[in-house]
Image (tube, rainbow, N blue to C red; front, top):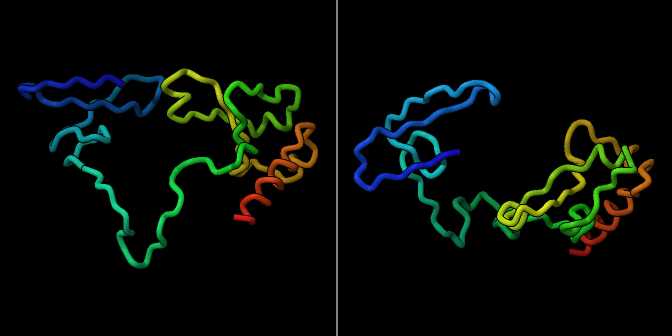
Length: 142
């Protein structure tokens, strides 16, 4: 991604998309301007709120942050379970702000897609099943 800024706003904003990530870019028409989400549209400013937008919505008590007590997202520098092909099926890169800004390598167990099999975690030498049960116990306690 390349972003350029101009105080005098003499040039027409340009935006490209990559329909094929390995292919050539395709120009996207910019009618309103490029906003903070890097799409054509009005500037959208997010405001701090302490109440829900609608009384029909439940209040948010916890934001977008892994709440796994360290069971499914090991500490930075923890070696991946390379010797366990079953566990490796569920290992995914984990990139938070710290990892992104400092180039740190971190991973997590990801058991949320269609390929997940509860039978796998029972067979795995890494015993992710015990980590899942430990996390479940923490969440039940609150």
